[in-house]
Image 1: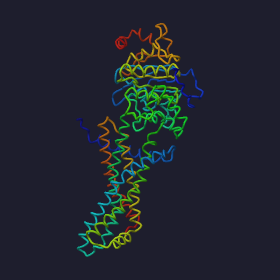
Image 2: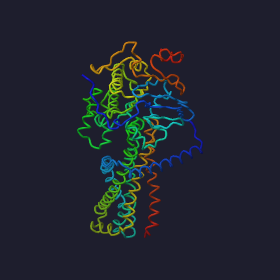
Image 3: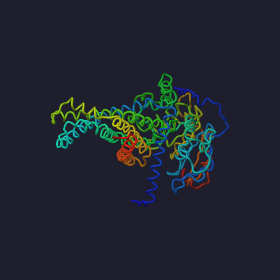
Length: 260
Length: 282
């Protein structure tokens, strides 16, 4: 195997970041250029959104349930077991709902987009598309970005809700708490900042999932092995970027929204 | 059965300078890393002519087609296609130009998630948005041209290699482009299927007078094209008497080490004193 010098490796990484930035910029710019491919957006929304619903529901439910179970142990020591609803709701809405939903969707769709577009690249279908007068960025990338951002927003809301239901199941069945008290506690503890943070994150994460998946797919080289590599890289990069962006966005929003 | 008529696309209905070459390559240089694949390639393709491009594997034959289509930009040199300098054009302008060009890729490059019908209709669907009766008629005509009308609702994965190439030809000709680019259309096919493909290319050349650049490493295919003509009455390809071979609008281009070592007709190719060419065609 040929060894790459650290300088070349660093240059390569910087170049990839630059290419990704330009790729993302073009994806957004295409929203303001015709044609917009609405039918493709709807089709992708179905594949990404409806297709991801089962894993998002299951993830949300079990996360909410385990959160309630873990929290109950600590809260019970302080005699605050009734606050389990508040803990589940703020944790789910602010953090776990958007992040876990995004990670699940990234695992399913970022890699899916990379393998689909990567296969199209290595079988010359992307070149054929350009030869037939269609811009692959407009036809394939922008609809996936729009669909992912749009659907992840609603998937995160569903995940939050199902997470609360999971917490309720534990609160009611194992902790023997009153359901109405759980809901009231969960609902009243939420403030505008929590909800805003919980809704802005899936929009940013959705953009990352789609652009990373498409970027690696469109840059796949080297036959089926290259497609496999692009698929893995897309999933890893999207997951890491989601977690890194989560920290940055959380810190930024806490500072700007004068968080309690 | 006579050859079905393909409707004239609006893109080809514009006034064009019929004396101007369809493709002009001027001193085109293209490298990949330190490997210079094309080292000052120059040639031109007159309107209505089919030029077969020969060369060993890796000599840059397919690259010439991608350069002509503007899919790749050369390092230096000038490429004029249908009167427009593709080396100076933006991607958005190239999409418009590509509407006048049909390309048949080496491995067909059919969209595997679309049916044959959707593949062939692709360009028309992009232009008009809705699959209507007019598009359906044109799709059927294009598929009838390649004798695959019965495959309308099949997926590309359900077709044989030869059938896929024929669908790719149907997709390329549906808008009756001014220029067709064929990238090894018979590569990897059996002799019978290859002959069917060659007959379709000859049909397109002689019936619709479409200019074409054909990349191949199969000499016999290009020689068949140079020695045969399409008989529209009987809808089949017929061999020409030896004295009439030069009547066919067919020429040859041979590449070696990134340079053009021959550009001429069949007679000149057969009588070339160049040892490499003699060895190549023997």
